Length: 162
Image (cartoon, rainbow, N blue to C red; front, side):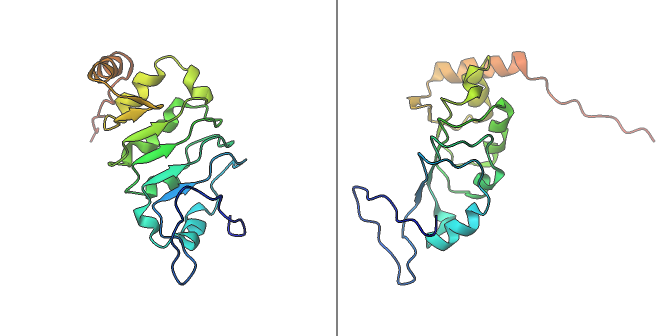
């Protein structure tokens, strides 16, 4: 990534004197990425304020899982992961630590075929306003809450034996 020139967009991205971009978006879609090794280090070299990243687009790559490194971007609002190879629905649990996440795409991954896919994601990430490019409605939230009560067993606290 460090040697590639970014694809031109509609707006010109401003640069600092050190050559870092003044942007809040990382768009690495339509590549063949299968892991995010060194992602934070590379982003830190490319972007002036990586802690302010607002949008990450990793759609149409070959990512087999949701890398925990994505959860280090506390201000993340939009995350596009559609068209990858994510197989385990439980991978979504990792994103629950992102309090500002409002928009997520996961369609086109093998997890989309899992029973209760939409309800699982919306019950795990209740703050989402948009999921797979469609708005989250009150009915979606209600269905997700019911689905969670019926399918997710609460963890029982174990008693300590003295």
